[in-house]
Amino acid sequence: MPLDLYLHTPMPNDMNERRAISRMARLLHRRYLYSDAHLLLVANINPDFSPPLRERQLPQLDGLLLGPEFIALLEFKNYFDPIIAPSLEGSWYAQGSKRRQPVVGGSKKNPYLQAKNSRSAWLPYFQELTMSLLSPARRTNLRTAWYHLSVFLLFHPMLHPESKLPPLGREGYWLNIRGLDDVVELAYAVRSPQLQLTLDERKILVERGLGARPWQKISSLLYDTVGHVYVKEPGEAPVAYPVQPFDDFTLGRASAQGHRIMLDNEKISRVHARVEVETAGIRLYDLDSTNGTFV
Image (tube, rainbow, N blue to C red):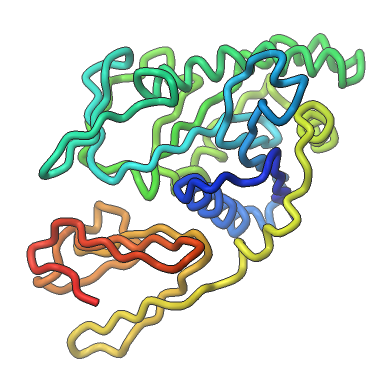
C-alpha cells in the first residue's frame, strides 16, 4: 500500500485530534492507493512516552508526514470561524458572529509561534538521527537537507475562506497554513530535491528513530461507516452520504465554503450546520443559520 500508517503513542481522548488524523488518513489513502509515491504518516508523536525524545524536551506533534522528497511536521487546529491574524508574532482570533475566540498554539501565543518552535526543536534531532542511523555515504548529503523540513499548519474541518492571515514571507518556504483537505495538494507541491530519502530510510527514521509502530486498527478508520446522512431536496430523490468514524463536515449553500454536502435551496444558509462523529454518537450543530436546524 503506498501509504503506511503509524502510531507513536495511543490516540488521545481529544475528539478533535482523532477527527483530524482520521480525515487525513482517509484523504491520503484514497489519493495514493495506486500511486508510485510511497508516503508514511505517523500520528500522535508524544515525547513523554519515549525516553530519548523526552530527554531532548522535544514538543509534541500531532503528526509527521514523510514523502519521497519532503518531510512535514503536522499541527492541527479545530476552528470553524474566520481566523484573524494581524501579524505572525501577535495574537490570533477566531471571529464568530457573536464572539471572538483566541487561537493559541499549545503553550505559545499563536499557531505560527508553535510551528516555528516545533521546527526549531525537531530539525537538529532529525539531523542527528541521520548521522546515527543511516549509512556513511548518505550522512553528508542529508545533514544540510533537513533545513528543507516543512510544517503543515492545517485547520479543520477547513480554513475559513474569509480568514485574514498575514503574508508569510520567508516562512513560506517551510510553513504552509491551509485547510486539512489541502494536504493532498501540499504533498504534491512541497518538494525538495535535497531532502530525498528512500522508503527504507524513511522507515528507519520512523521505526528506529521515533519508535513508532504500524497502526494495526487503521482499517476501521479507512473503510468503516457508522451510518448515512440522507438529503432530500424538493423534486429530487434522496441522496445518501456515508458517515465514517470520527468524521467532521459541514452542510450549506456556499460553494466557496468547501462543504461536503452542498444544498441548492434558498431556505438553507450559506453555512448552515455541522456534523461531528464521536465515540458515543453523532452530534449536529446549527451554525447560526437563518431558518435553524431541527432533528
